Image (cartoon, rainbow, N blue to C red):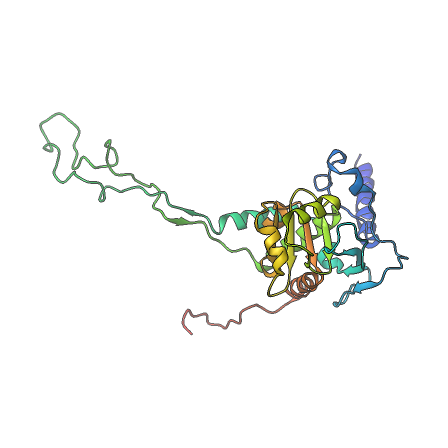
Length: 302
């Protein structure tokens, strides 16, 4: 019995080890979309073939490990609804093809929900409740239990002991490595589920929101879309088109977070946003020096 279990474990480990080198998607079943939720038109679109004749519009600037290869994806445009892909973009596998870690996603999501949460629940202690300045009855001789104030916590209408004393902050900080890994896992999950799209720019011909909705519906991008750009100023047409839409949002790449990516079904990145994300995430993931210098002995004063 022990020999059979060891053989089964060995086969599973060998399969996972081989899949990590072959580039196969080793997603757990709860990350794979059910077949009844995948649109047939979306499932017909395949990844770019290795012998594609389209030009490579972007290559990985960072060094790719020898046992991995860059991911190829289509580069689309927003100027026409039925336009063909403009070319190919190479994505770094250490950012867009990391192993799925649902525990990391859960930690980052709970951190984002908790660090800005403030509870304003507040109760009064016996010193803050009005009244109770004199002793209700004498200490002895009345036959009743001895009391010194009617605002004691054991009295109705008295103070509350060990109650909430708000405002209470639930702020805490996750390690930088965990936050960076959460972003990479979220990007890799979107990429594996075919919900990550690359565009050349955010230029659209008209500020009409209906044009953007028709484009999203025509390309089967889903019910909600998050558009990310790295420019300092976003195009005016895309801002006006998304101003009245609740399911299409535009944010700068510096504000990209795990909660926003999980909240929206599709993620649209510009080429500049991809470059910014790869540079920042790879630097944080591979750095060995602290973000802020420190010295010993530690002191709160400079």
